[in-house]
Length: 137
Image (cartoon, rainbow, N blue to C red; front, side):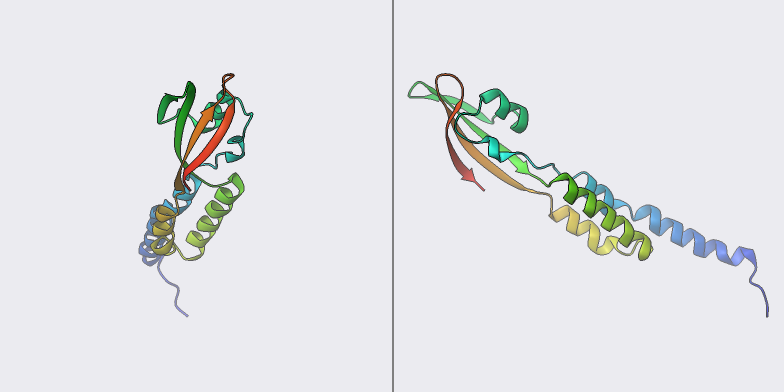
């Protein structure tokens, strides 16, 4: 039996290394998906500053009938556990398929990146939520 020269394994190793290093897109995309916002805070009685801390600045603010009305629009993302699970799953699939998983994994993660939602919030005189109207779910 004849042994293979060490030089003949170099191209195979380089191809495998290139596939693994280029195949990190879907795990990275999964890890950087938007986080889930706590929309349960969109309830009567919640102070405005709590909404601002969770949802960020509103896209519009106006006064209607003497009350502050704001519109919040944001991308509703994923819970931390879901993001971690997807990241690990993509990483394992990349290793097991020597990077071929990226053919399916990267477009999937590029598409599944949360969805845009919008809410109109009316506050009472003490800047607490009085009324919430979903505009886009």
